[in-house]
Image (cartoon, rainbow, N blue to C red; front, top):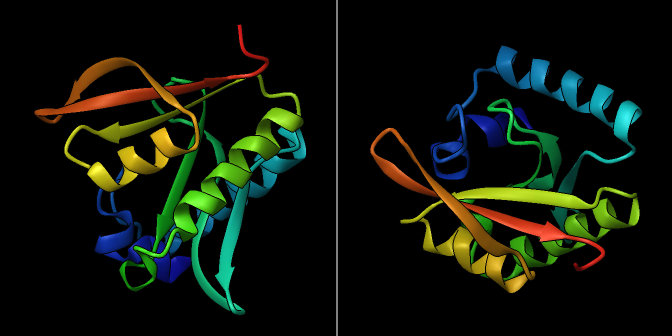
Length: 144
């Protein structure tokens, strides 16, 4: 996980950007505590036994609430792994009783936007961050 979070291709677009080893270890401790409190959290993604990325639910540090996130090493991209894993994590969260899950992607991040739309999330609002238009996706269950 430390290598993934230090990889600019995997974590460069995430809120907070790439992480140092110490930052990644602190986040992992927070992730474990989050699991204990909310019965949802971050999963590792493996393909044929090899660690390729992560996905799951976290509490966004900007106060927007429970959010889906996913990241893969660049060499693992383009095979549908992120879509499958993110969809499973979203379903897991809803099954655990989390009614509303958001996700945030830069308007320019076509790959993430395609994944989020492909798993049924819809754009509900936009905001500006560092000169970029950010899209806030939402999934609500049960459907209103």
